[in-house]
Length: 304
Image 1 (cartoon, rainbow, N blue to C red):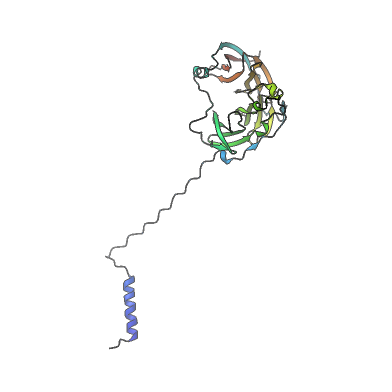
Image 2 (image 1 turned 60 degrees about the horizontal axis):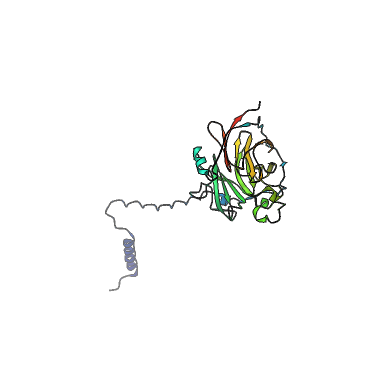
């Protein structure tokens, strides 16, 4: 018996509909669970490695005032020696401990936020802090650290390349390997970067040009002023509108200097027994100065 073609078509349609319809138990089908959206990977926090360094312009190593800071430094502080005591030269840790402090420069341990392992293709060598600021130095060895990075509250704010200042214009024959200049210390005051820079041998080895204190714009590295030579040979302390620092080296004169923050003028000098290395102000307002072989305590007074 032959089945009519129209009947075959109806049978096929009925089977297809039955196969396509889901079998239910009378209960509503569960809602489909939406696929979880993968969380976005947070961008890494910026570091000094993300900055392009400001190449600090080469200039003659001489006292100059390009643009004095717009501040009134007030009367210059007067320093009076309260005490001085010979030290053992190598007992630095004991001196820091007596002040309830530790030597500020760090060379190992966890890096502060914003400080990178490298910057301007040079490895990190050391860092220190000043309030919200961290200063990091980069170079191939500790005798030549031309790149200085500045971080504030964990955010990188400036990377300064002092490579143009490395070689002084005049070098005493035979001393070529000892006169590489680089930043020795840095701090921020009045949105200005203060940098102590020089080398670690006699000033005469570089024609007398050594141990300067220089003020630069933190925003672009432009120089505001530079002190006279043999002013800052290691470290400095901010004291209101002034900077307390010093210089000395073996057979050269040793002094503590008071420098105006406004224009870098040296307003007072105090002879000491040997080269000043560190300056710390304690809670009683006195300034403790660690020199090579003598510890000093200065009281801070006002002009008569």
